[in-house]
Image (cartoon, rainbow, N blue to C red; front, side, top):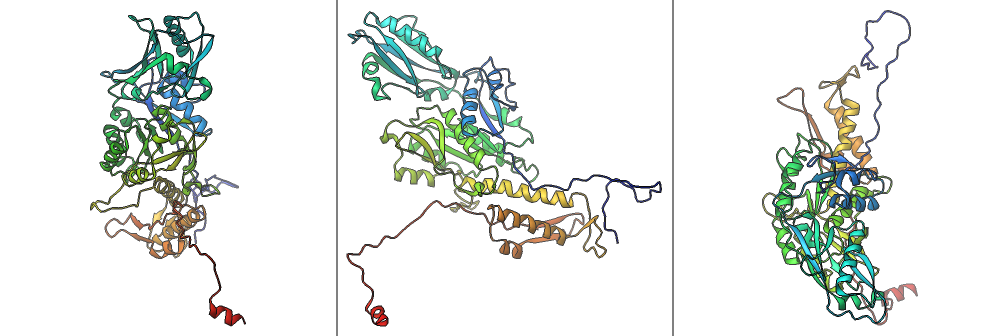
Length: 510
């Protein structure tokens, strides 16, 4: 009976005495979900366009360029996921792109009888200058230009208009439609007073066009694992590129690739626009996050959502984190819509969640929190409504669960012969029943980790058998039962004027 399996020590050695070889015993699967931030770099950034590159706190400025979209995304992602492995997918501005522009116009008459502070907000960041009684509209404009350009992390630059020196021309650092979402405000804090609103006329950022195409960048990812891909591009074209990357017959979820991944894009459309966009999709590997009227730019929002998702859905841990909803988690550093009237109503959220669009809410202290993060999947191949892949957690559980089972199988049976039976218990031979037992043990582990449930039903319905045609192949059917998320608690509260025990109960007590 052969009871010990050697990989290197030959069976016919005669030279004495003691020989030992080392073999890996295998460890439980532990996932390190990479976050891939997809966004535009500046020409000063040294990163190769369309090629993924690992970023660190010290390298990101050099890779993407100071104040670039991609650097801002990294900084935002890092505060939301301090320990996450973060990669960049740098994009050049589209050659046919147009940068968004805006304007600040200083009023002809300065309504100041004493020195005052004037505050404006760009992307929610306050920029303050002092206005003196002796100032003219042109000196105020020049001071604003200097203050804006001296503020780190802004997505635009300022210059005094070449014709009217009292006008401040604002230009997005990057070409493309994303620049139209750069918010410019006054009076966000009551202590600022009315000076800015009285003195300045704001022409919002507009006319940016032609975001980069994602096809070339996505084609460079190869078979490297990037579980979460976050970008501000959430239009039809970008979502189509993401679908090609993930859903194609040779895509990252294909049986022949098994690299997986999920795309998170943002969109600043109205509820009607978002509804139309979401209803035109049916992709379990894509998420649309709304950003209309956000003060933070959409690329920062995308980075925050991606970081939160990667950090919380990369592994179950002791608290079944992989299966817990992301609801209530704060998007750190993100500023949402100013006015309550710009927050989505209950009925609007209901519409969005049935049309494949995720939702958020804003707390009283202004913090933006995830409400429900979903995919755009809405119907099965027959066109009938289907909620199987509604929640992002389901896809995260699928990635983790299959990888866990796969590693268990390769650890135990990675290099063995296959037979119908093994009466001699030879360690170099595996049977279909052996594989079945290994899968069962892996599933029980996943149940204990809170990823799947109902191990008994899984064991009853699990099928593992040798292929009828290929004698070297084993086929398995895995009925995975996912742990769900608690999203709804419905209570029927019955009101009584006075409650009394029934007469029958009273007589029985007597």
